[in-house]
Image (cartoon, rainbow, N blue to C red; front, side, top):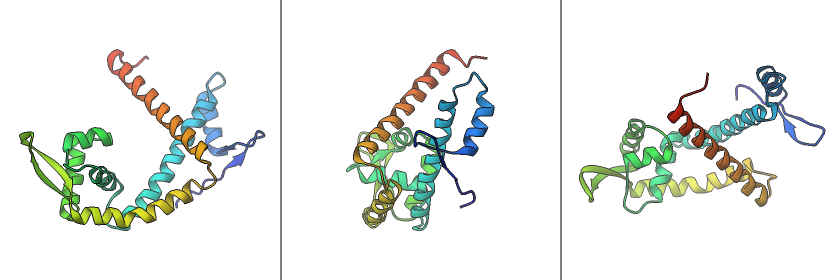
Length: 185
């Protein structure tokens, strides 16, 4: 790991990153919303931590974190998923998904099959080797998630999930507003 995070504790017992706080305080200015900027920095730090763990686990098995995400999605579908639907679900471009499906196909973990509902289209589906790969990856993933969320109660995990999804919902609404009205200058 390149940069070790050093957290400190506020008077109320909550953690904060002193480097992020200093940077965000300068950026937010005196009339800015420092708690929101600090929360944004903390979300980035948490996201990067989870992604490092996912990448460490999946790439050690020959699959990138992006390909792993698709393989997990494919494992939950009995009849395959279109490239467009995979792209929408993953929040990436169809071109990106095409490359990831190519990679999974080359590894024998997924395949393209004709779409029975649209003869011009194909679906991606998981292969038996892909299902075996997912099963072999399941237990190490469970152990990693337990380690990452050590010390969190079930109620805290539910609250954390809710806060993250509310944040994502706010971002989606803001993006829609900006798409319709353009950014304010």
